[in-house]
Image (cartoon, rainbow, N blue to C red; front, side):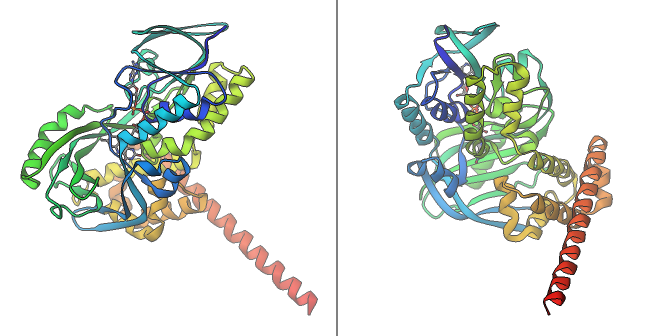
Length: 420
Ligand SMILES: Cc1cc2nc3c(=O)[nH]c(=O)nc-3n(C[C@H](O)[C@H](O)[C@H](O)COP(=O)(O)OP(=O)(O)OC[C@H]3O[C@@H](n4cnc5c(N)ncnc54)[C@H](O)[C@@H]3O)c2cc1C
């Protein structure tokens, strides 16, 4: 008999939030190689989402907008934005997971074997027996690598630090600013409190999981130039990966969080997407465990059900256009112009909360904001058919919507005439 129903490997936001959702219902073991409660990331999120997950106590900073700047444009995205104290988030989840009965073990995953009745995980802390393994080891998952599952991978690579600055030296706003170099790197600022800021440089890179250490010299130089009085508090670094896996599960193994390319096509950012998906994913896993549906195909369906397919398609279009923005002379101007064209609705894109109608309007706006001829020259040829297909789909949806509206109009008029 398996000692645990679920063995979660990795105690980052994916592993811990999942442990919290599952531990009241099934027996959970969480295996983590680093000290529990540690991460080098920084998370901005939204007041309502954070409240919904009982994380209000972890809010470090609150503001009503995000600021995006390109060489010639600026977009203010109004929302209930928060920067979280990432250590506090993990501590809250650790306490809840323990209180609900999860067992937390410090050890590095080394391998696993699957048989008819379960899975045996080998770690530096010994052997652990369970019915299901959930891989939450982040972008550099050893299981994904061993099975050669990555079809496509891109990364936002980040290097920076929490720094202490004299009050008033940097505006208290969450912002993303171009550094104006040929490599198209950006400066990101997440205020933490009156005197501390999470400051990092970041760069979009194709066909890689990213090497944050390579950006460290640029961060050091940027800090020295822009914030010479800054005092280093703690390092920040990592990759936010996006991409596609060949499949999102193996026999008795399923991927969640960055290990499972949580951001296919850079969807909704990582931490925020975990908050959005974890409850649906946990419910799917409970069903699979109850019915003993733990084969690769059934678990793959559970993983896919947690994702929003329309949003994925749309983010793929944005991903292809991003290449155009990066290569264009006025780097990112097109992107910021597009955000401005959306007005108050741009926040739906950042939140990854999009209705089909929103996606249709945003796609048509995109083609207005960015010159088609230039776009066609820069978008990888493999994406042109996809984008053309999506555009055709939206034109068809628009035509059907318009026909339906006219039909309703005529019906209403006929009904009025009859009554008269
Ligand atoms: C600098 C930075 C800023 C970011 N900003 C934002 C933001 O503002 N908003 C947002 O939504 N997202 C943001 N992200 C993205 C977000 O942090 C990630 O998407 C998220 O951390 C992914 O969570 P995860 O649990 O899947 O993976 P991870 O956070 O990578 O956690 C994986 C865990 O698995 C453990 N592990 C790995 N291998 C093993 C092994 N062999 N054995 C045992 N344990 C193992 C690791 O130690 C780690 O604890 C940012 C990321 C970075 C790096």
